[in-house]
Structures are given as structure tokens and as C-alpha cells.
Image (tube, rainbow, N blue to C red):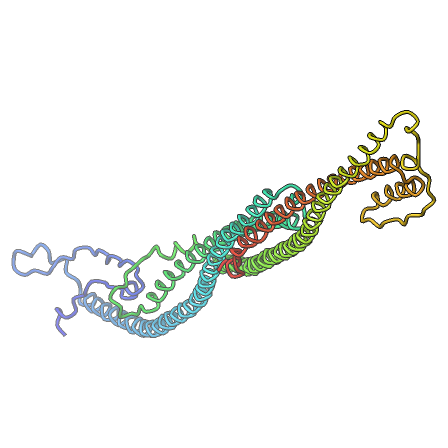
Length: 476
């Protein structure tokens, strides 16, 4: 080994480099004068080392080199062991992180699926409520027709004449129908307002779930992308400060509670929607049944009223026919009485003329002889007459005539007969006047019944045929 081979190299601590400790500078040694030869170095011979020092020096160097070699081999063994251990731990930790990301992805996917299910349910509930809202609006519009029909019936029935302008069962049922329709309209409006409010709450809950779902969708994509990272991925970078950010976010408990609260709110809205749907269906069914039942009640009242009017009109017509028959008979009776009175004028003139001529008899010849005045006991049967008054008068007259049968009695008899006939003629004329009044009253009442029947049957009942069907009142 030459002296050049024993030249020492700079100090290098491989363990410090492996552990990342800064390398220490080698100690500075004092300059050793180099040996020289010739006369030029004669003054420096005293600076040379001795052979013992030379041997000691290179043995020291050999010992130091051996020590460093031993340390180097020890460091290499430790480094290999550390490399193998850290490589396994790193791979294990990385695999565990990948597994945790996979579990997290499954959890996010589960919550995301649950959010999506409730979002779809809220969407379906909102669509069903919108359909019910349309039905309520159609049902509300459909009630305008019954209201117009009922009010028109009431207005038409105000044009009934005199005695038929009564507050009967039909009018009472029509008033009930108008009040019922107004109540139904108010109920449908309140129900529609509830549906509109529930639609708004459903949309708010759905928007909250969609925002949560969107956040989870992005988180799922980030975690999925993170789980696909490997040591061979080219797009990985160093982010020394990324770990400190995690201290500022919520924990898993709050994260789970946030989604559970959103789902609970959505579930409440779904339950409220279900209850409201049942309520709306029941309201539409009940209002339709009530309106149709009241419509049937009013129709029955109209039919009964028309039957009463027809029966009354028939009875009035029959009575009018009787009155007309009595009027004709009374007119013929008056003509007969007038003829009877006229027939008594000739016998009265004859009797009065006889008495007048006999009153011109002279002196003693002017006496009350039998032709002038004579009693008789002859009984005369009573003649049957049609009128009770005539029978009474003639009975008295015949009773008087049974006692007196002379010229004077003849005149008195004719006068009494004429008086009875005139009295009977006056009564017959009064009866005829009353019969005419009854005829006019009957004709007016028949016209009134005819007019009322036209209003009830041809106007009101015909108009009520436009009453909406059950499907229309139900909002279809």
C-alpha cells in the first residue's frame, strides 16, 4: 500500500443523511509542513515527524476506517430493516385508507339513495297535490252552475202571481241549496289554500334534500376519485397543509344528524301530504254527495209542487165547468122569470079593466056583489116550484086565494104573483152576478196556476236539467 492510498477522505455521516440530519463539517486540521529536499528546505528539517509518528498516524487512519466501515454496515442493516418495515406499514396504512374510503363511499351511497327515494316521493306527492289542486279548482268552478240555477229558480219564482206567491217547500229547499253551495265554495277555497301551502312545503323540503344530495354527490365523486389514487398515479401532489383543514369541519355525528333531520322533515311532509290527500278526496266526495242530495230534494219538491198545481188546476177546471153550467141554467131561469112576469101583464090588464068598468056602474048597481067580492071555501093544492122562496110566496098567495076568488082577489093575486116573480128575478140576477164573480175568480186562479206551473215545470225544472254531473262536481 502506497502513501497515496492512505490519504484520508472527507467525513460523511450516512445515518445523519438517512435520518435527514444536516451534515456536520469535518474538523479543520492544522497545516502540516510537507517534507522537502535540497538545500532550499535545510531550514525546515526540524518539522519532520518521526517513524513512530508515521506508523502511529497510518495505524490510526486504518483503525478509523475500520470503525467507519463497521458503523456503515450497521447503518445499512438498520436502513434495510427500516425500509422493509416502513414499506409494509405504508402499504398497510394505504390499504386501510382505501378500505375506509370504500366504506365511506358505501355510506354516502346509502344516504344518497335514501335522499333520492324521498326526493322522488316528494316529487310524486307534489304532482298528486297539483292534480288535486286542479280538481278543487274545477269543482269550485262547477259549483257556479248550481248556484246560478238555484238563484235563477228563486228569481223566476218571484214572478208567480198573487195567491201562488207563497214561501213553500220548494223555496225553502232552494234557499237551503244556495246556502249549501256557498258553504261548499268556502270549504273548497280553504282546502285549496291548504293544498297550495302543502305544495310549497313539499318543494322546500325537496329543495333541502336536493342540496344535501348534491353535496353528497360531489363528496362521493371526490372520495371515489381519492380511492382510485395509487402510488403509480401521475396526478398526485404534495399538500402539506391539507391535514390541518380537517380540524375545522364537523364530525360524523353532526354529519349524520344533518341528513337524518332533513329526511325526518321530508317524512313529515310526506305524512302531511298523505293526510291532506285523504282529506281532499273526502271533501270532494262529501261536497258532491251533499250537492247531489240537495239537488234531488229540490227536484222532488218541484215535482210535488207541480203535482199540487196540476191537481189544483184540475179541480178549479171542474169547478169552473160546474159554475158555467149553473150560469147557463141561471140565465135560462132569468129568461123564464122575465117571460112569466111578461105573461102576467095581460091577465092583470084584464082584471084591472073589469074592475074599472064595473066601478062605473050607476047608483045602486055599484055594489059589492059576488063577482066583485065573494068568499069561497074551496081548497087549492100547492104547486111545486123550483125555488124555495117562490114556494113560500106562492103558498101564502094560494092560501089567500082559497078564501077570496073574485075580481079584486084576482088583482091582488096577480100583484102578489108579480111581486114574488120580481123578487125571485132579483135573487136570480144576484146569484148570476155571484156566479160570474166565481167564474172570473176561478179563471184568474186557473190562469195563475197555469202561470205558476209554467214557471215551475217549464222554467225551473227545465233549467235544473243543466245541473252538473257527479264527475264534474268531483273535479274531473
